[in-house]
Length: 544
Image 1 (cartoon, rainbow, N blue to C red):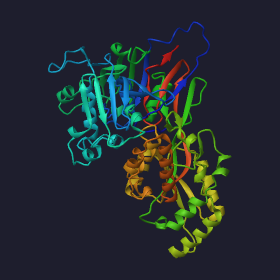
Image 2: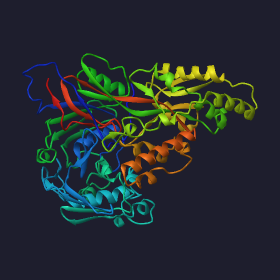
Image 3: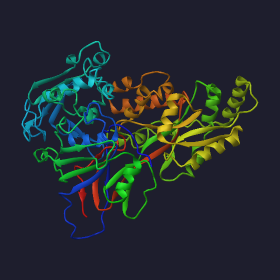
Image 4: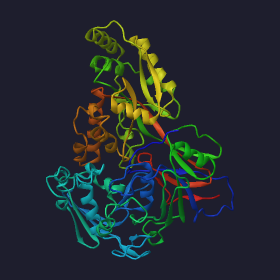
């Protein structure tokens, strides 16, 4: 069983698991959720953290200016209201006065244990300065590079205090951009745009986000205890509802979140199966039981990548021949609900302006099936490589990402049309990524995951992921996408980026793959972000 490791979302999918019809089941409120994390959170610093365990805790502990509702629409959260200047460059936010910081620990130099104090505009100024600071090395900085002087700060030309973000007063925040960006508001709904209090940050002396005394909440829940011993058992992370902020969050329904921390996916599954957790997230499709409700979202694109530095696949003609020979329409007849044939780069779960991006831009126009051209290219490849036939090779696959039977269908197409046999090699997740980085493979089925729920989050992986950099020809794609001023412009630009990658044959999309939220049927309204892997319990109800 493998979990989807994908870092941060702008839109959400909701599990509404209806229980068994007990009329006296109550209103589902006040429950203490038993939950489970796969691995100890690496960091609870919203400007930096990227692993799913951290994303879940951060989602429940922090809130920002904006948030995405269950349909991907961007609404106000800590901002009571905002205005945008006619030129689209200046955003002015009027902050709510009922959002508070809370720390369940004693920091004599900043605050007493159990004290509340208001979140102010200066906390957002400091957060954005940290995001853009190259010393920070935030994996999200490029999404905020449209802020005035952002690109120069990221490149080290300017210091972070030159960022176009200022506190007009305690409850008025002004953000000035270098250029209008249609994506900017959705970026403000993402966890990296959460506030950060400078005094508290500096008081942690380099440990911010790394222990329960070095985190401070302004969201739905606050940290009560975080204990982890890598050599021990009974590792826990315990959170309580932050009642002071419930008016801000509309309603926070559970009273407590009690996470056990398991070392691996097997431990997560065993905890869930034994009743120690009420939901889990996974790529694995085997959790079928009348006891559970299973919700899947198509959030991963599985595509072929080639080792172009050695072996047969240095040859461009061979790579093109294989790509042009894949008949996705025939594949579709044999696929289950877990996967569907992929023509494009961006999976259907990626949202843009409250709609699936794939609804706004059909991927059928990317169909490159041309068996005649594939056969000619195969002949050309043999001539260029000066060989009469190819020795058999294998596609390396990360175990449990997809049923190998589907890959055998593609392998059969290649054998029937091109006379080349390519087998399947299933490996563990650790071995898969280790061998990719060592170049110890011929071709592989790579799981492409965006780190936010947006087509920009998917395309940006070709800028930041070294495994995929060659597929874009070394060109940076995200800066151009951030400059789009309308949704229509964004759709056109993302479609062009997809076409460029596909026409380069460095990443050949094959399948869109589901990731899943699995929960006991006594639960409703657990909100799951299939891109970051975060589980949001703010509205969760339990009727057990």
